[in-house]
Image: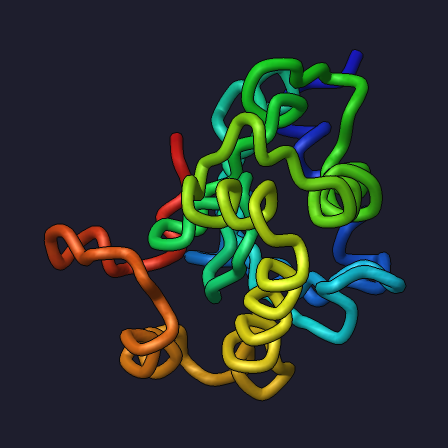
Amino acid sequence: MSSPSKRREMDVMKLMMSDYTVETINDGLNEFNVEFHGPKESLYEGGVWKIRVELPDAYPYKSPSIGFLNKIYHPNIDELSGSVCLDVINESWSPMFDLLNVFEVVLPQLLLYPNPSHPFNGDAGALLMKDRKQYDQKVKEYCERYAKKETVTNSTAEVESSDEDISDEESGSIDDDIAGHADP
């Protein structure tokens, strides 16, 4: 019989043995960052993001928290926190899914097929519905500015210090400006 800790270990190891770069945080398997490349033949192709993954104690029975550490322009991803608003991760999670599925199927599908009807980033959702060409241009600008391989390898703080002029959103508290805090 497999325990949640064995399953966690197996899923993280499977991800590490795949083509993904995985950096553990605090030498454990509960928190780690994964280097994620935008899907081919999409607006995000060529982009590289660092994704923060936090596994709850009850994983795989409870879904992981997923968040983009560097900025991405997408209706279903919060621009400031990087949190992903995704039904399969947040509400329809099943122990049948594993971490490799998240990175090979779920996230690519999210980027390929945004849902502007239920946005986490209202500006991106509205722009996608109103002016697809302008939306596409803004996605490409964000990829160019925030999702280059060298950007991912530099510290996130350096990336965030130069982001004021591309974002239209008003800034709230200083905590709101720090990307990468995945929702619990």
